[in-house]
Length: 223
Image 1 (tube, rainbow, N blue to C red):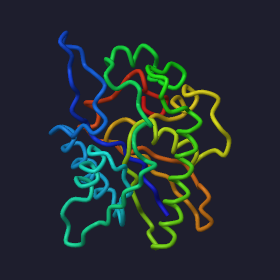
Image 2: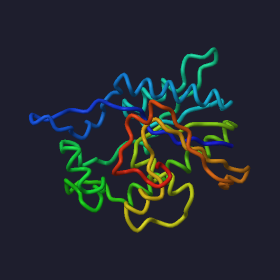
Image 3: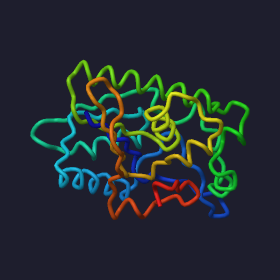
Image 4: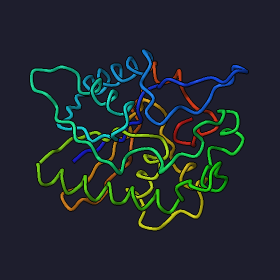
């Protein structure tokens, strides 16, 4: 069984009065580049002979639109399942702040929250475990062999961690440096019949995806 973790495509960002890029609003839509990124990724998966049987996605708009572009309009519709635990933070306290402020803390809103209501790193990891448990059980029940999970940077970063490890990270930097998903890239994981991870993972990317690489979150696997 193959699972592909895929971050949504490029979304709409607001700008403040000084022209500085702001962290996107919680339900920001894709821009044209984001849609093109997902179309190119779909074509690249097809070129490699990868046929997705289902897509699991975050309920947020940019993930919904990304999943729809990834599914395409083939003769047999690809089922798309919404999973609440895949959504962005509870809340993401960086919303309303500039991207420069986010970069200054390395994206670590858990150790350096902008709001006291920021979701903890522990909660992020635990809800990622919950999401993975549900998705794996659903895959087995429905008999899928190849599926995609479409979501957001930090939740997918945590999902990669819980796929590979049973322990808890000591810091956000630890999971970020292990693997941070760039937009519209796929990372493939192979599982055996006992749902044990096998072999090496590979990253599948496209030219369009290279236009939105976030350098301050560029883990060694992404370089």
